[in-house]
Image (cartoon, rainbow, N blue to C red):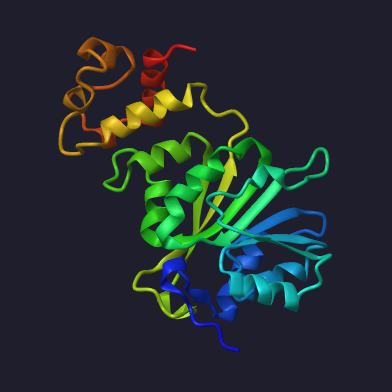
Length: 258
């Protein structure tokens, strides 16, 4: 029976075989990898991954698709976790000593940012992440300071990961075609992220980008004096988009000393 894509789950199924094989080449799955796929959908990528992997975990919210997956694959090779990826405890997946989890998926556009932040909490336990996302989101993730797309998402993820936009995927690769282009991003957790309290960094970054047109001195008024901004290496006359990660970390450490 044909599965009808559901808008409430943000379902756009990747069907282009050339694109699928390009993604597999980028991921480069190895037999002994402990890998989890988020949102396997109709299993287009799942089947290709299992050609290389001994076993694969998948997290799927749609109960109809969960049933199809369990029927179509050997349960010893495909471990299906029925549920919402935003609530799923990825750290609960057993990984052999000395190894780390690999995470892949075509992420629903409507939950992409919350899901990326959810996964950031387990970054030290992850080897790498390869995701298909809306191109605009990936551009924000990898944007350098000074770019118009540099913002809260850029800072918070660049604090945790080294990220690269691998290639663009056109709408025609999907059924149904989305209205936007997509992109594949590679995310590798940093072995030694800059030290600072996460809550303080989130607080500073959120306030700094809350009014992008204002200079950062005005955005962070009441939180830091002009001299404190200067001491952290920040030009008070700059806008938030000109402030680098190191300076945001310095401000977070000033706000909540370790």
